Image (cartoon, rainbow, N blue to C red; front, side, top):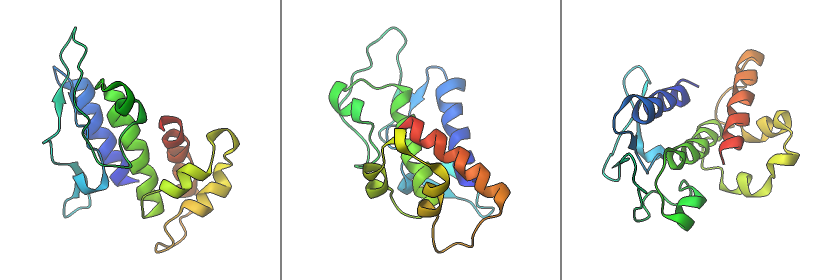
Length: 148
């Protein structure tokens, strides 16, 4: 959960506290670094774009396959929403321990039972989390599924 929170903090800073706002355009597990205290830091701003006020902000497609927001591929318009979609995929990946591509494509959000989904999503290499942590993970998954 700390990794997810660290990425959220970084995105909040880039999107809300910077002027002009910065869109990373490649939020993925390969671009999240952990320090010695396992605090997450977003890296690799090679594809980042400053959003220009009063501009359409059109750009070429950039990002890692499996994390790119579908609307970006269709519209080529860069907004903060591009990073938010990628964050949703990343959050599910952190919980699952691998990219959630099969899980995402097999479940429609309208029929999603998150308690059942949590059991399917948890990284089997980790010990079963406490009920308190499970509740927080379910909340994270709810947000992640709303973002995708």
